[in-house]
Length: 94
Image 1 (cartoon, rainbow, N blue to C red):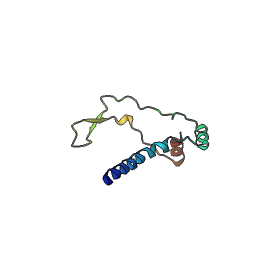
Image 2 (spheres, one colour; image 1 turned 120 degrees about the vertical axis):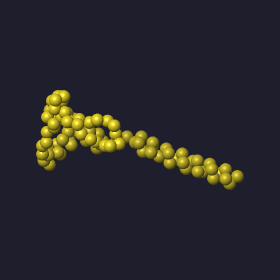
Image 3 (cartoon, rainbow, N blue to C red; image 1 turned 60 degrees about the horizontal axis):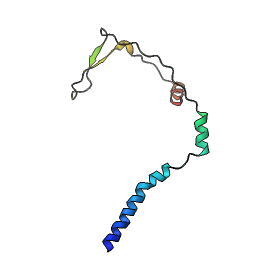
Image 4 (tube, rainbow, N blue to C red; image 1 turned 180 degrees about the horizontal axis):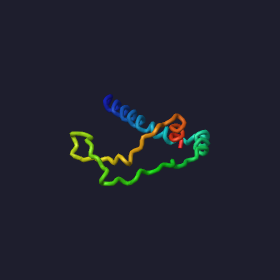
């Protein structure tokens, strides 16, 4: 009889632990969160796509000896620039 009650108690405890995250997730958002979401305006970043790679420009490179895949890169499609604190924070907010 004691083992049966112990099993029932353990089962109820496990069920309560599994349902707790669902109860928390079902809580409505606060007014402050709604206002923050309304204030943020989403806009797409303005980026320039690299030119399509030309077969004459591609260079093979190794990624891993464990892979039989072959990888190539077109040096004409790579650009190196600097990131300033202002531009990094703008791109993260956008």
